[in-house]
Amino acid sequence: MIYAKNTDALSYRGIHPNLDLALEHITPDFLSRVGSERVELKGGDVYATRFAYETLPAEETFFEAHRNFLDIHIMVDGSEGVEIAPPESLTEFDRVEANDFYAYRGEGDYKLALSPGDFLVVFPNDAHRIKMCLERPAPVSKVVFKVRIH
Image (cartoon, rainbow, N blue to C red; front, side, top):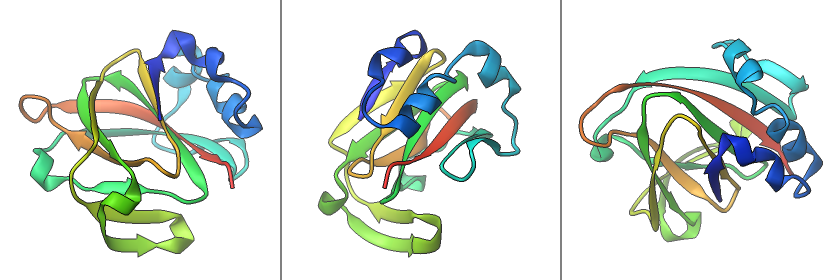
């Protein structure tokens, strides 16, 4: 997991070339151009999409993880709670291997608030529960990069 400010994104280059490409696009100009249609930077290996939704009480959310991709969550408007846990400490209840999607229930090891100007990188060993309201349900908008690393 990497939890940092957008302005520090380039400090994390060197982990994987596909991650480097995504980090280089964490700029106000690029983020403002991302809409609900997928923006491909490197075909199906690196792409970004904007999501808008209302946050939910924690009990209405679940953890997800991926085996071949990492995610970069970048909050544009609003704030949400996020929890992180290793998948092996959780109980899997759904999977769609073709979409690299694994769903879990359980308790998080780390809790954080994702707000405008923040980004979060979650690796395959980081199951993440997103969309959690901090005080009450509220609208958010964020850009999520999907980055193939396996």
